Image 1: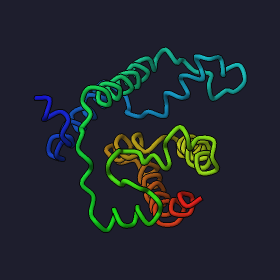
Image 2: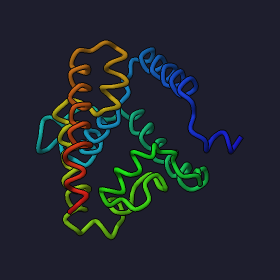
Image 3: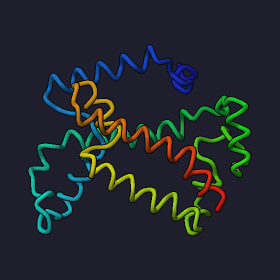
Image 4: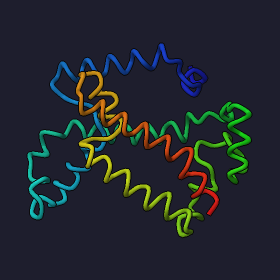
Length: 188
């Protein structure tokens, strides 16, 4: 059982599970998304005194906070007790491209130490990836009215045109980052 849990799940297991969750959320009148909890957290912290955007009944969003807490705890459980010790299987071309960018052990960990290690935080590369990149992700999620999970999973499954436009924008941004920005920033 543990071996099954630590192995990557095939699409025909994970996909239908997401569909079941989406159905239950639609049935209960809720929408899936993680970035909306930022609004709730700011509202809880009193941001409603400074901006109308944060002035709403955050208690009605309690379920979303519990969902994010569950995802956080699930991440801890997965990282501590269900961590797959095997390296990711990457195509040799991808491995060579990562090595050419300066990533020493592509696929050994989910996050390369050359980018996401605490030692990198106060370097120019670390500031660009973690601080500036984090700001852009937060700003982009707010500007787009939701994050990738909200638009790609909830928005597309409910046939919302704004979500389709947002997902196309996310995809184009991902391609630009992958092929142009990340190689430049990793080499810093």
